[in-house]
Amino acid sequence: MPGSDERGRLVSSLACLQRDLARALIPDQEPPFVNSTLTMQQLRLVVNLALDGPASSHELAAKLRVAMGTLTGIVDRLVAQGLVERREDPNDRRIRRVALTEEGQAEVDRMLDAGATQFRRVLERVDTDTLRQFEEVMHALIDAAKQLRGE
Image (tube, rainbow, N blue to C red; front, side, top):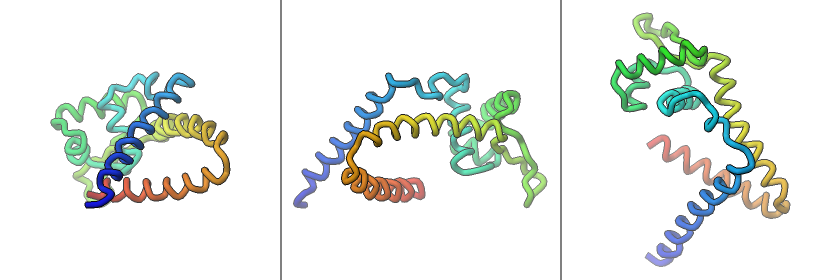
C-alpha cells in the first residue's frame, strides 16, 4: 500500500516526540501522581471511577484484572483515606457500587490539572497558526482515543 511506510514512520516519530515532550516537562515539576501515597492499583481504581463513574465491585475487579478479595482490600484502604465510598445501587439494592467521594474527585482533578498547567505553559510559547493546526490534530486524536476506548 503506497504511503504505508511513511504512515508507519510518522506514527513512530510522533509517539517518540510525545515521549520526549513528557520527559522535557517532568523535570519542571513532579507530577502529583509521583508524590501520591496511592499504590498503583489504588490509582488505577480511582482513575477508572473518574473516567467511568461509580461501578460495582465485580465490574472493577474485571477492569483491574484482580480477584474480588484483592479488590475488597483496595477499596477498603481507599474508603479509609476518604477517597471512595460504597453506595447502594439505586436500581438493585443487593448491589453495592463504589464511587469517588468529593475528596477523591479533587485528588484526580489535581493530578489532571497539574499536567494541563504544564502543557499550557508550553502552548503559550507556540505561534497562533501552529496552535490552530494543533487544535485540529487534538480533536482528531481525541476522536481516535474514544473509538479505541469503545472497542
